[in-house]
Length: 71
Image (cartoon, rainbow, N blue to C red):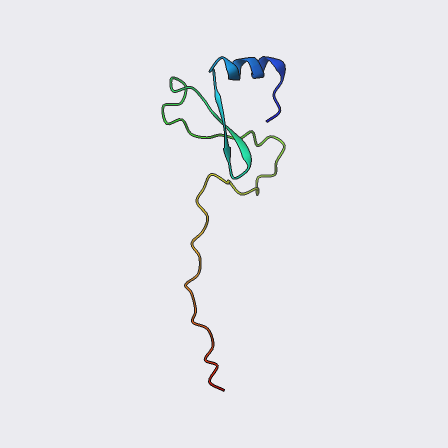
């Protein structure tokens, strides 16, 4: 993830943690700020319709058996 020099130093000092979720960087704030340590992304540059990749994917449809090839 690209960070400015100050944020880079803060990350190494343990003031926040960056984790990779589905190939995208997410920030974990310290426990005293966010006791649940919820992964967060800066959505300033993204549209409101962008899917939240921290949500689980929708379930797959039920499998259908292959067609009968008795011919």
